[in-house]
Structure formats: structure tokens, C-alpha cells
Length: 223
Image 1 (cartoon, helix red, strand yellow):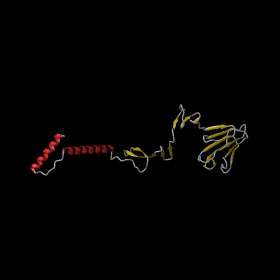
Image 2 (cartoon, one colour):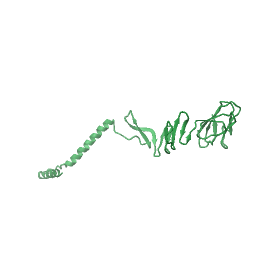
Image 3 (tube, rainbow, N blue to C red):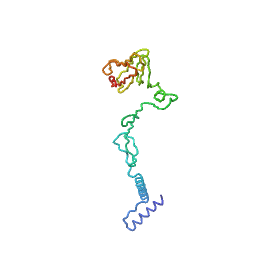
Image 4 (cartoon, helix red, strand yellow):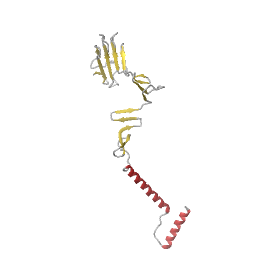
């Protein structure tokens, strides 16, 4: 550094003696300029390698996840968003995390709240118990949200199947079937003042006949 300063001082003195009007650029500034030129060259090479100037994916969609565009060779929006509450939205659906969750093909050990597993023999199970896919009953039956298919064997007695309230479970489907050949009927009853296709009850009297009932969030429809 001392040598560089002495050199710059000597150059200024020589210029003053000759009356020259030229101002010499300090060597330190020349070095900075050279570094800047090198960086610009590197940036140009990177731009060429990437096939163009890199730009951030469109920010018009907040929280959008990026994906690689194999045609353009850059990043673009995927149509999937992930917000700060860990909810993932995509066309036709949403995945939301509200706690610990795990999906596995066999029962984990130990089990914990939020875990869900699938057994081909028994169906879908959870840490709080079996999420019944098919249930067979020989006595009056109260339907829960975990039920789906209810087989009624009325051999010993007629069976009343009591539906839960349709309110708050719009789209919920139950399949109810009579499997025996006796004259005992299956009577499906709505909750409280709710109706099933305009009636408080619906009946199944013949063997192997069934009804599919769907909640419209106010009552039940037969399909």
C-alpha cells in the first residue's frame, strides 16, 4: 500500500511539473473497475447457460408453489398454493394440516391421535378406533358418522335404523340393506323433525333391497 501511494504521489508531481492536465486514475480504482467487469462477464455467462435472464415466477398468485417448465427451461407457477397455516390448495381439493397426522398401511406402534392406517381385511382404522366401512346389525341401530354401509339382519326382530342429524354433514352417504328373507322390515328414521324424501321414515321390506340416503345439510334424500 505504501509503494502504491508513493507511486501515485510521484505521478501527480510529474504531471504538475510538465503542466499536464490529465488526472491519473488511482490503481485501486482501476482494480475495482476490473473486478466489476469480471463480474459482469460471469453474469453474462450464467445468463447464457440458463437460456435467458432468470425471473421469479409470477407473483400474481400469492403463496404459489413453483415448478420447472421443461419447455422454457425456467420456473413457473404450479397452480398449487401453500399458505402460512399449512393449507395446500389445488384444483378440485384442499389438504389442511390441523395437527399431527400419519398414514400407513399397517397399525403403527404405539398409536397416537391423528394417525390413520388401512387394513385390507378390516378397512380404514384410526387411533380412536375402527372407521367402519361395513357394519352388520341384528338389533335396532343408531347410525354414527363413522358408519358407511349398514347390513340389517331382521331374522329375529324388525330393525329400526336411526339416522343422525343431517345438519353439518352435507354430502354424507349411508347405504342401508336388508339381508334376511323374513317379513320383518327395516325402518329408517330421520332425526327429530328432519325428513327423508319428505317422510319421517322409509322402509325396506324385501330381502336384498337397499336404500342410499344422502344428507343435504337439512334432511335426507333417497337415491
